[in-house]
Length: 354
Image 1 (cartoon, rainbow, N blue to C red):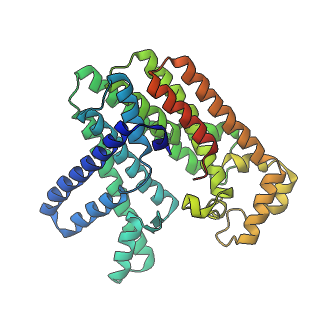
Image 2: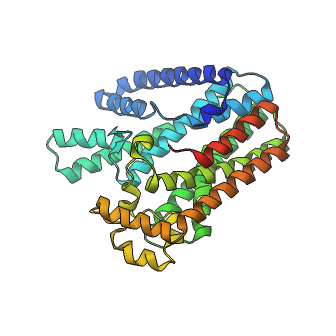
Image 3: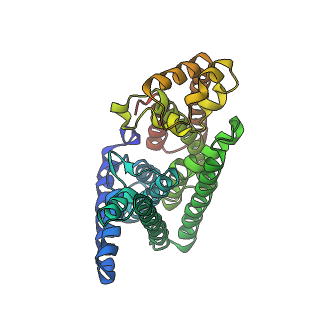
């Protein structure tokens, strides 16, 4: 998604991120070999979990850094790679929290080791425990790895300390957001609670922190860094709200995600918070949160969300957040390339279909 806004110089640095990650995992696999084949398999699964994806966060780091530094550097690639390691770790932990064994159409880390456990004759519940424990450990390793990569940046001490503080804060906020998300399940959260959760869980580490960290490494002023944090919050909320809409009304062929899973899980999104106060929702809501929800039941829920006006309200909020991002971009006096890229990105956040 974000890649559509960036120039070819950033695309080449994107290849460098892949090369850095390949080298990083090769070194960890070599270390792991001293501790047995099973530990090697854990690192192989972690490496495979980092493959693919949109690489949004590295591209934001690279774009912000290049805008202020004038060109990419090996250190900007290292920083961009650290954010991808962090993202991969959060996905692993998120899958454990959601008890998901598949990601991107294939077994995730938990699924991989759960299948291994079943193959070794473990009962299914014990095999799943083994899989989830493996995923937690893999995620922990990648968070520690990301922090080490940042701590070893070749940059002035004050710059490195500022970047590390940004990364530490986004981890802190992501955990707060994830904890709130779990707590909100079945609790009928209101708009304020849901938006606060999104800002912490998604917007901070996916948009604000990559932009700010890249800018700091590139020599941006404190005022520009603060503005990028605001821009990132608006973009991140719009991005997640669009994701929630696509999770119910999108195309599985385009998104790669079932349009039943959020409804079966009973995911407390803003769509549901808005719909819940309308009588049409109460007449259809008996299937919400049921693992047995079928296509007909999901269709009833979608109609209730539509007729309640909830979808329109969320769409208006997405537009408002994107407009706020564009206004903040215009006021920030950013370098031209970054200004243009982020403005286009705001439009894509509003209109994307995947």
